[in-house]
Length: 154
Image 1 (cartoon, rainbow, N blue to C red):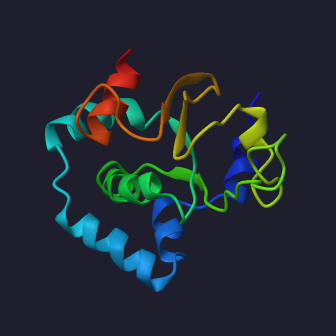
Image 2: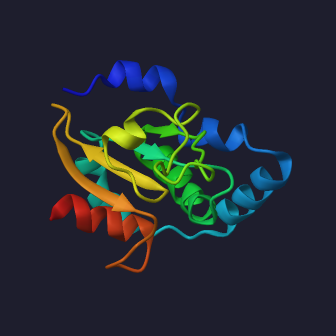
């Protein structure tokens, strides 16, 4: 069973994650946020689905795909009133050939859940059952929000 209260206490929201970025990274993400035109039809379809979801995200400021995902996450948090639980201090273990991630500062869940690349989104229903995973970037659809909808409807 997933202890979401424990995870929530060790994570931040997408907004909190962006606010904690260095000025340069924050400016890049916020500029992309301002320029991004989210697919509002997809957001409406997600509205009923995502309000019952719990979403845990593994991310890092050094990750380009994470920077590209963050503006969409900000829009979804605002438009849907949902909360992403973001582990934002992911570090690799480059000097240890037997480990991909440095734990700590990365959370133990990164290994326990088999994370191989970031951003890594895990979607749980309100009972704690895993219902989908999105790895890095959209693979089937054109946008992150469309990919999330595709995963949650599958």
